[in-house]
Image (cartoon, rainbow, N blue to C red; front, top):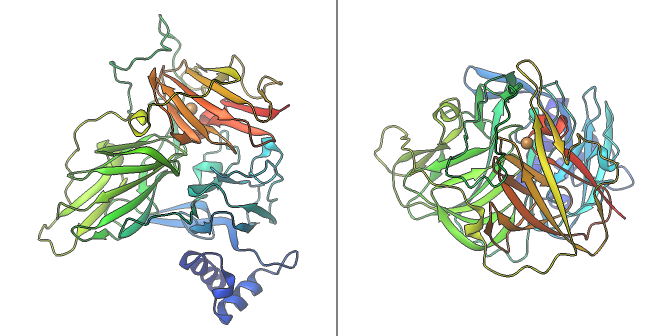
Length: 482
Ligand SMILES: [Cu+2]
């Protein structure tokens, strides 16, 4: 068996089942142990190999990127809540890499973040990550390496995958479960902003300045190719369903740069969890809006037989690949159809409840501003008047409850991510809510979001916009515990 076959076997093993290595056949175990000499006397539950690879997005369309274990998305890592997990990362590239476990409560030195002090997986070296899997829900893992002007590093590459932490309490009210990661490929810089999510003029925009910024905008990141998982619309297997089935869709926006809106004509998405956390008031919606870093779990009842396209609402993005065919069994419709769902506004607060929040011990205001880069420059970003790094502006005391107020004084929407913690939404553009726990929240252009966070995870904690370019050019802050 050559090395490639070994790799394949390793990958297949990981997908086929969770980490119970004891259940593998002797042959598979032998293959794994040949591949992975046991470190510290114990074989890893999973191994991820970071290496260059090709992705065939469609027949005649292949791109080269860097991925995990020759798969995009990387192997599905499925574990039980509370399980102790060991993951070996083998870095076959020439640069240091960090694997971040997004949405997990892990210590700073395991979080996969340079700024928090996690050691890297060195070039042509390896690093072992060990953590207890919590909290339950849809998590994910991805590269957390700075890319700066290199659009073939960090989250611009195929280094992302699903990490599912199963709870013992999952009622399992569905017939099929699918994992759908939204992605763009072959990123480029342009003065044209592809993300046509122009702000609705009826938006409240509580942070809009009286006079607009006259400075010309800088280069934005765009992309010509789109996919769901590793296939452009029509190139992969359709999602095969039967009338009456309930499909649990785990949606992940693994994009480095774009917020996406997804619809499926004639069907509603019953949103049950945001960022992997069950919502107080599950609701049906026609369109899901999801920002880089976010996850949405939704159940879709299959009650309109036919062949449909589940896809991005923007024609350009969908026609460039962001979609998947949904095909009912035994139907006569010859071709997949796209019919745009009715326009609807995404509103996190409808999934919450009305309840008072405990009074916070302290309020921290965070003001985000853009410094436009001009026609051939990159925009820079300020948090409270400064690009990253700050001094000691953001200090938490263990056990205290903080109210963070995100003031977005820019004309872009930003998915803001807090590492190693969950926060609870308090208000979005003045609409109050309670009970929605997230790790990433889109703050609309000139909008404001308020969240509560209990400081219960001591250690350095990175906060940043999940758009890679914004993060690389100043949109980060490091929280410390006193
Ligand atoms: Cu941003």
